[in-house]
Image (tube, rainbow, N blue to C red):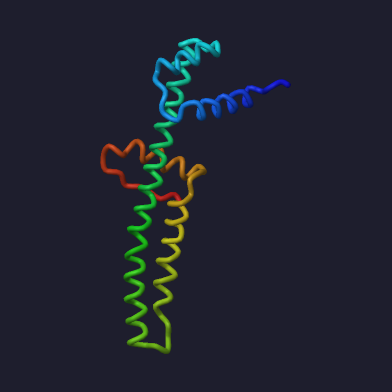
Length: 146
């Protein structure tokens, strides 16, 4: 039976998981790489690539959390103000439901805000993420790309 590179990687990964449920030291990692014929230069490049990818994933999770907090900060006033408007509408003119107009207008903006907050791919998302990365050290004001 022959194995593809992916098969070997998956089998070894499962075997390593079963062998040791803890963490590996740097020396153990280098020893395993050496046994597999991987040079230390290649291992260091792969490790650097892995660290960059891990940091990118962490930054994306932080950005997604930031977007969702901003959306919730928009949603709460929408619910509060429109509940108040509906109550005023019911007290002052129960025969004509005029509160629907601000609800729909503001709701449309809220819908697009929610759409962009929970959309995690595409050009607009990537543009906002890059802008957030650049500005996260200072004041960041996100311009929406609806």
